[in-house]
Image (cartoon, rainbow, N blue to C red; front, top):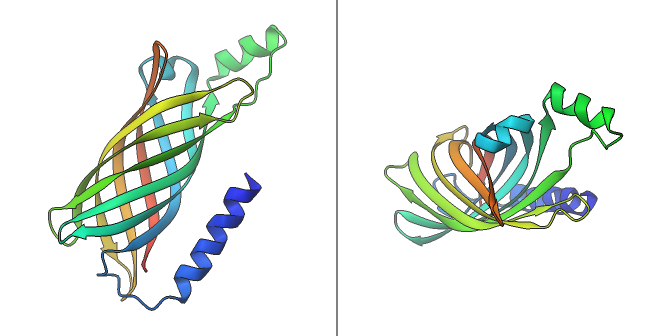
Length: 178
């Protein structure tokens, strides 16, 4: 986790030195995420939270390729935590590192739709890797001539063997042109 944080800070510092316009299609964004579990995941978890970094590269005028990495952890519901404690199991939640690639189609300068696929790597011992998919819709709001705010909502699923964990995610990220 320390290496991911260090790399994130380094990328932000390098990008902050760039003097690109916000309107540039090549962008980096970093920001917090909140996840609301659904289905089977909602039976055990109450809320997820984390941080993500996303890069965008303009392929054609209205379409950007994306790559993202993040860290998400989900908090157990009280009754699940109590049950785990009663049987002598660990009650702290483990995290996941989703690594995804995809694209964003800009309907206008601000509004976009996107989708990414990839993998979610569990940080728990023996947790394994799940296939990840995430369609999203969002908006880029300019804050200054080269900075902005990217707010998006997505439906994300992580599938491993017969289990699929689904959640709605909300991301509010600081964006800067590169």
